Image 1 (cartoon, rainbow, N blue to C red):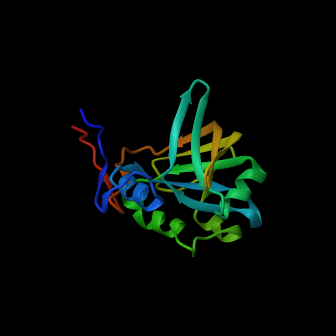
Image 2 (image 1 turned 90 degrees about the vertical axis):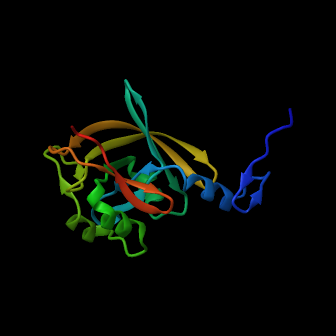
Length: 177
């Protein structure tokens, strides 16, 4: 039996160039989050879809952040981050925090609320997690931040999740019947 080949939209590839990986991964739907970190003038936020749960006991999550992102040094210095899982109606929020014009510093405060415990909460989100970075791992042009979940806040009403698929935001519609 011959070895399988990888047929790609641009032909057969053997090397895994960045553009090829991007083309493959756009076919895989992912949830969309906004990551927040820092406070006062150092406060930053950015749209992230490279996020996953790692462990329930103890509660751990992993988020991948490009080393050149404004948020990277803030997360590394503060050791804390918030992850906000976006609802289907928050495509505009995802686009804002993915843009070069994303709010930061004191202007970011207009977009985030504070929980009674003092953690960032993004209004309208499915949930927000307050996390403390435990370990950082190199991941090519990204760093992988392994973080312990300290606190969670969930929306009271069930909502559909915002999903990124085929280069656009869409809904992860659920049947609630």
